Image 1 (spheres, rainbow, N blue to C red):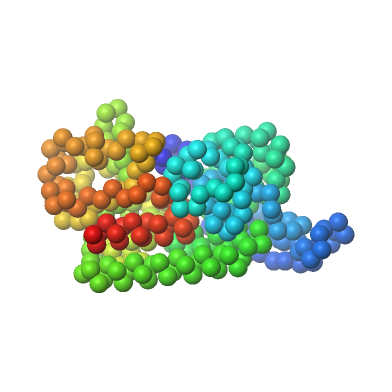
Image 2 (cartoon, one colour; image 1 turned 30 degrees about the horizontal axis):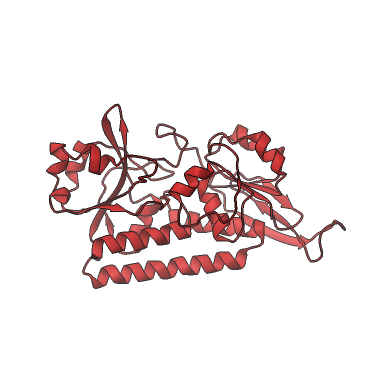
Length: 325
């Protein structure tokens, strides 16, 4: 299972919470194409980003921003870890064949420079030193990676900021309306099934030295926010980190959950399933109430847990379908 960070043990990069704002003005350069507008934005680091016109050749260094770009109708010329994105984010599939720019934590500067992009979109998990190098290649728009105080709001603000930079604000409005409609649809379906207020614990798991490490998605996580929005109650009492709202526990730590719905997303093409495989004969796991009652739900592969509106719509479909079947 891949984490939103470079490795499971990596600490979340500190996000500078600055609201993105944008203005447009007529382009001063006579070489600008007819009707083009100069765009000035302030990104999550407080840096001013100036573009002569909406960016068309765009590189994305993290999967959340790549999903935003693809959903907005912008085909990125460069994407970090194309194979991984394809496996983990089926909700917004790549329609072109972008160049692979390396890993999400260490993009190749030479590869990006060779693409001559109009804009590089990153998030605040990327080290400041790497962002500084990227700014020598092209304008860089950095968005906040996460905010446990309001993950849905952060997702939508990031979408809006990227839309301003790429001239796709109308598409962003449609995406947000579609997401809101999906939330309402999911909430109604759960209520109709008598599941309003049902407790749910979402987690993912890793096997390290033959031990299963479990990562709870607390109420401060993006999926935790979505679960609340559709009328479910987050069952985790564990405190999550201030950025992603993620906690840590082991199989013994699940004993406090009680009679809940337990859900997780894996990826059979890249990882094993620690819950179905590694814990299959574990006596603690088998004795948990939600395991005994068959309330363990392996949701569809290809839903990126830290993605954009399309991933969250796919999650709503998956979790509602699993709970109401």
